[in-house]
Length: 230
Ligand SMILES: [Mg+2]
Ligand SMILES: [Zn+2]
Image (cartoon, rainbow, N blue to C red; front, side, top):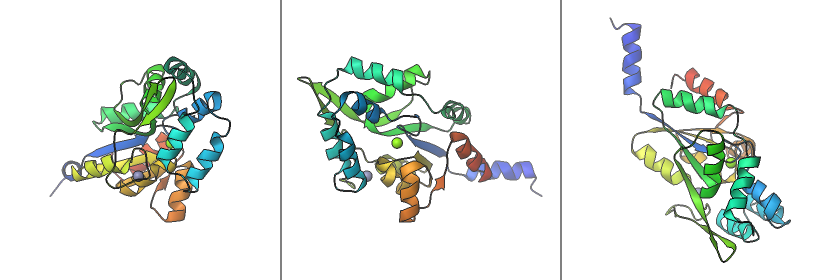
């Protein structure tokens, strides 16, 4: 007869490897890097642009370029602002360390910009962490938004987070996505399992997209243990 230990080993071996893809702003961090930049350096009317994204009137790409075109701060000023203002969600570092100890990769998928990720993670002692993002480049004193990951499937997103998730699914991973906002909607539909909060949580509920609502990364870890995925 198969012992319990043997059965557990067999189940573990037959399970597809997990990969955790995680939004950055408002999920790994407590504040939003773009909000902090626009509050300090952007046009006072940036809220109106953001509103038009939520209602679907503007694409995320159009909005990002419109919002950043009013910002005149230098790269140094932006990095200092972010290192000062953006705090990592306290439940994230223990979650990251626990997943790493179990050999489960975590990749950040941000709808924001490359230069916003590093200063925050360096300050939190979590750098390096792999991430995919849009790019910011400063030419003649103005910021240009570049989208290095164009999507064949999606014209909406700057960087469609569903694309890498579909690739990982095809590679045989069980993908877990964690997010909170409008740039996470495509990913929430592509991942094997989605954890959602804030705007994304409300949207998933309205659109009847299956998602587990969460508040902290410790909720996520508990749910994965409950499902015997960890
Ligand atoms: Mg977010
Ligand atoms: Zn998309």
